[in-house]
Length: 231
Image 1 (tube, rainbow, N blue to C red):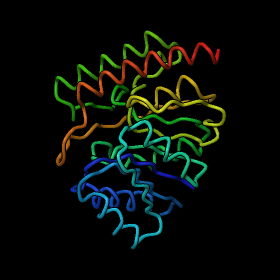
Image 2: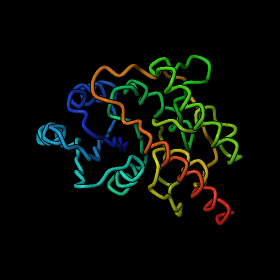
Image 3: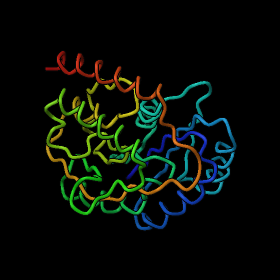
């Protein structure tokens, strides 16, 4: 079974389309969608309405709590599937790639990462400032962690894993790049990257802020210390 974990904050205009596109893409797959929702707008009610109509849609609403990484980890605890996908809820991660990712897992991959930077991929959905921030985050991580250097897009927000690789990993829910923690701290053998296009946001607001960037620096430092302890 596939569990699709979606951390979400104030994406009321994207939820229905997102669920419909996942359903079309995974029409012959056993799956569940887990929304870990920190919203303070109508997003929560929209998800509840969908969950009442479709048992595959599940909601964990968190009061007075925010943070992408912690939301994803909460989703890991809820997930019933032995395969877990993580993606954003703003439609910049195309749900249509989920099937291809799942096929790579079936072929033996432990981690599948859609990448903007392999042949056929594109980060065209980012403006120049966001591209600069994203590139800085990637290269800072690669400088600090050898395991990230062979991955073209180690800060991707969309990925799929076998749930078993999380066993024993002490993931710490700070910052916004949970994939980086998984790549550094989890035990896995086969990692596959597949190309995808990061789409332009059509509705809602980006969650990027100075606070998020500061959290990322803190996450890097914390992860560096924990990786040395693990080693």
